[in-house]
Image (tube, rainbow, N blue to C red; front, side):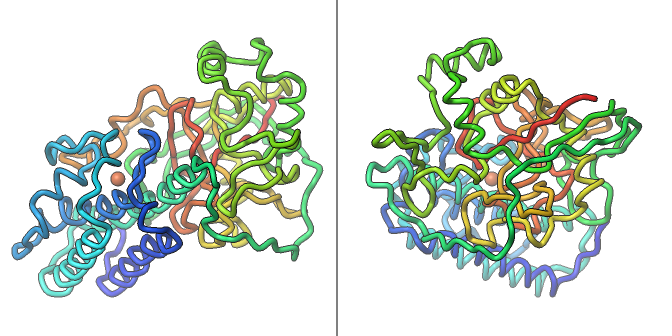
Length: 421
Ligand SMILES: [Fe+2]
């Protein structure tokens, strides 16, 4: 069990809860309600749902004095927890013009006040389970902060007038890497999975041995310029690079470029959170599906890293997020070119791995609602590693396992190539 300290927890609670509100500050009230596609939740819903998590999972179960802010909110803001009860179906989250944004802010303030009272006045003994649940509330909120950024990008990016979320100020303080190199990793038995005393999600347990054949990996992400070569070479018209499901997806959805790309006056442009702009060829390509990542690798005669290879690469070359890495706190809201002498591993874009999202050996589903957190999604999804420019810096680690369906593109997703030796 990791140590629980009231003062430290309350400080982190305040900072993380405030960050959610900060991310929403540039939004107009109209932006809070839209749900342009089922996977994107309205910002207002994220604000309510992260608050509901503390109410439903912590206060309702552990506080003797807690009274719900509004008994109807459980139905509105439960996401997928069957243990907790019925809920508004996901595609209908954008139908809720009420409660108003102002009422949800009041709900947040009420729950914050109750959480502080509960921790200061009621909490005596914190056992292993409660310490985990309290921390899970914070980690859950950080996951939704990332979703908030990617969801509001979709909401604004699908608007024909391409509103600016925040202006981007380019920094030119470091020399940047243009030519990629490959770094070799020896064959051998390695260990993956969480190994430490801090927090991890249940899906990172248990740590286990893997045998890796020798391989090499690219030291930076694939750039827009490199991806354009794939497009220009007819990548989206040539079936032989694509997985069968991917090829069906390309045809059915009429896909011919990454999400947010538009050809305007014969120039490729893309929507960024600082507005519509011409593609910068040296920046990492992002908002691509697993199908596209795999097809690009196939076109290059290479492959993606497996999940185990990625984690071993990260253990060997960057144990913790590098202070130079580009996370949400940098407020770039876009992936950036790799520094000249660095290895681009964490931040910038999530990297699709070639591995299906499956339980690790010894994985155990917890009893109750939090047992629904990760385990029930272990089918038909691929693992992504490394975090993105929308991920909070202290939320990511080498063993962190993100997962999405292979056709989804609204997260900041990118490509790293690898090759067997
Ligand atoms: Fe959630």
